[in-house]
Length: 171
Image (cartoon, rainbow, N blue to C red; front, side, top):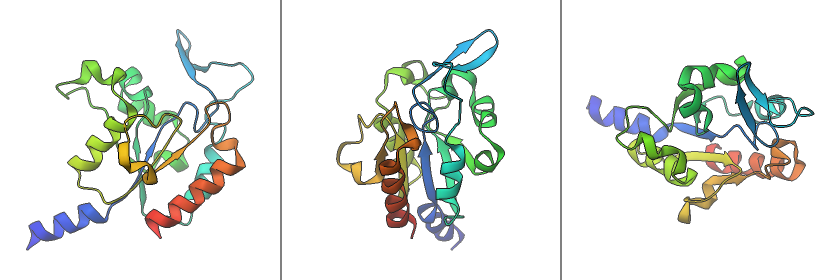
């Protein structure tokens, strides 16, 4: 009976896959000898974190899985720890792991394929991805909110779309 409960609990998980660049801040970031910096000096990294925190507030069960190039570049812990604490505390994993047999090819794998592999492996039914890249999601686009990389979550239309999708997926 406990195996059935474990399976039920897994499928009841509420998971949001989060990209960083073009989503939680505009454009991208670069790795320098002084750490990660915004690709544009006028942009602050994680500038839209407060927006995401507010949108997630009614959805207390939503866990975050990182689906960002920051994880293979920096490692899971450093990528997670770059987030403000209010978001960091929701992070439960990442789509990338260095132990994957195809870890070397991960940077060239379509983002949707990365996310869907996690979805299928963990048998998720309640999930949502927020990303500026929707390649590889196939017929699962109803689970995706696409951001314009130059606006990220600073765009009111994207915020509205995310609010709607959060309600659809997680009640």
